[in-house]
Length: 463
Image 1 (cartoon, rainbow, N blue to C red):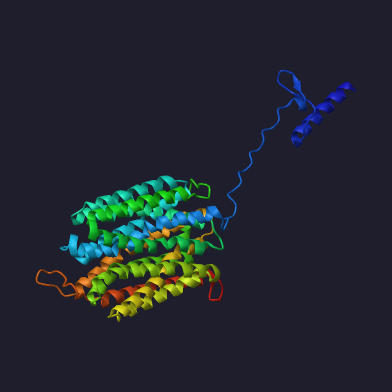
Image 2 (image 1 turned 120 degrees about the vertical axis):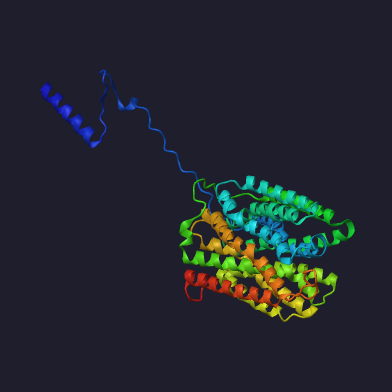
């Protein structure tokens, strides 16, 4: 009987082993045994860390991000929108032997690098490197403007203001706008619009600083004063901005799946054309005003008037977009910008120029302020927002790069020259430049219309 019990016990133990059930007695090779109470407790399974949660959509910290973003946009797009004053000064004082097209390349390369760097800096933000990128950007901006203040040759200005400042702008702009989008949901367009209005504020105050200080202390110290203002405001911005999402260390620089999305790809190409045309009136507004006989002092303020109107254009359409949908607002902005560009051809006096320039700046302000909010709405994951915005701005940078130089070449070809082959001041012909601008904006509006259809169809709904 004892032998039978032993055999049954062995069989029972083997059966338990096969079925995975525990036995009261485990044998070791040396013959010793341990009970289940002697076993070491199993290692606790590490819990997944909690995510950042949904966007707060308001609150002190969220709105401080908007303030920080506003200050960085003021020092990036605000600089680009101010280039018209430099275009005029370089053409008439510092670089009179250079053509308008050559001088416009300085502003174009600055704006190009602002957007071009976005594909790297957007991915860097997603990976958790916002502060190193921003510190490098702030240094390059201030250093570049300091070097511009001592430049006297075309190539020096190109390297300092075009390349150095442009790279600095690129390091600051895309990450700051992408951070804001992660803090808001229903108020995202309004928050982005408030930050984007910094470009108009910069476009108002920086030309005035340069203009007034050139008269009193000369161009070099005027630019240095501008650099000091930039330094202080960038430091304040970096003390406020805080990325909300955890780093996404792994991931591609380019999200190839996004390119295959009809809504995203059509919008990006529409944005490319919008950037190609947008800056042309800003670069040549003051020259156009002088060409039709506007007083020199008032002609200078045309650019500031345009940027002030653009500030309103970055706020009202964005506030409306939160209710009606970003695409439902940006598409009309594109077409109305085109209409005002065509109408600009008929502006032959001071009153007409001011009215048209205000309307163009208002509608094109919405066209420029809404893209980040549109891209966020087209992104399937918030962790991809920085990369997708960077990709879109990278493509858009190509339009900025060639837009104003093409306009300058059209102006060169249509305008008369003196015996020294210089353009005759006051006799430039602008209708070809403005016609080109309008046609490009119409095409941009058509592509964005296709984006809207691809996302929401033809039904009347928020999109």
